[in-house]
Length: 429
Ligand SMILES: Cc1cc2nc3c(=O)[nH]c(=O)nc-3n(C[C@H](O)[C@H](O)[C@H](O)COP(=O)(O)OP(=O)(O)OC[C@H]3O[C@@H](n4cnc5c(N)ncnc54)[C@H](O)[C@@H]3O)c2cc1C
Image 1 (cartoon, rainbow, N blue to C red):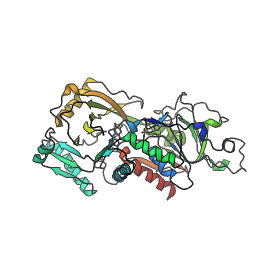
Image 2: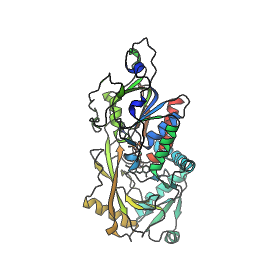
Image 3: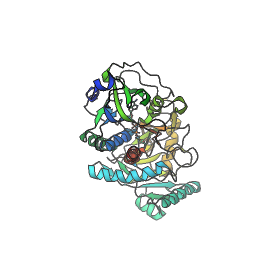
Image 4: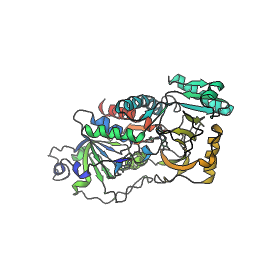
């Protein structure tokens, strides 16, 4: 997490021309070509990409005093290979494309990352069947994958149990998500982009060409005022003052990349018939400070069809620390971020972990942090099959200049650079 220094008030370029004395005979010029709402990994990547367009002037609007402080800094930091999300889905396409872009970008910009690979392990025949599905799918989409025999498994990772079989995904890796976002933000600002921190968006008016307005108007409130209720399909509009030049900007396009609050932004813009209700799946992580057992690769259990997550897996961070998680707990608020200390939940996580790492010292496993997955359906699954929800990245019909991103759960970090490319294509091709 990190802060930047630019102030919102400095961003209003032509306040007199855009917010006052307007008549339909005056040719108005928007303050910005693009307003990107939300400074997480995806919003940052989009803002950076759009700012590269000649003549573009992008504003990134973020409600916190720093970028990257919500879901993008509360995840597993895994560069996913794209193994789980099925044929013809945006998640597969953007994950596979984004993975390569992420490796190239991290290399170029010195962002700490490691192509450490991952194993997906099976203890039962049913789990082996699930692994076979993953293997065949990976082959079909040309993502590197290979079976690991028992001897190789024993030699390379003697602490890891994989009774029925193991698959290796060599292109999986890890990234320092904070440095990644810092690099994106630096690129954006160095290219001339503006960041509005501590600026929660509270109201948005689409252009009304019939009334002579061709620009979007976006209001922000001081950070202390009540933000829109994210779980409500119709967020209350806080009081605002049209004469307050510091609280409104205009832009030719709006990109909704507000993560857990993206449905609230959607509902500010689209008619009631197109409102969306958000759902939240919290995932709690556990730390493990001991030096053994410590595999050198990521270890994932076999995927469970219809599950909202990928199972309580073992990941490493760039400092070599082991963490376990995340589990799945459906919650009603996007601010319910306290890691869950529920004893049954903890016992279930330990059972999962011990199934593939039997030598773990359970006394050393401790609650760490939690992140929340933005879901578009109750019980929505992250993997292909029943209950699967794809990324929703749409240039909304009937609302020119609005690109809407909803349900940007995993593998959103991996996909971020590819998502940005897709948004650029939607606007410029
Ligand atoms: C437990 C967990 C594990 C995950 N693991 C992985 C993984 O290993 N690999 C991977 O690829 N992906 C992973 N993901 C998914 C990944 O973290 C997300 O897809 C990604 O971070 C989403 O980025 P974002 O920019 O859309 O959202 P966010 O990071 O949530 O950013 C949205 C931003 O919008 C801002 N905002 C919201 N409302 C407003 C408003 N009204 N006005 C102004 N600003 C606003 C917020 O403050 C926030 O900064 C995981 C997710 C979770 C929850």
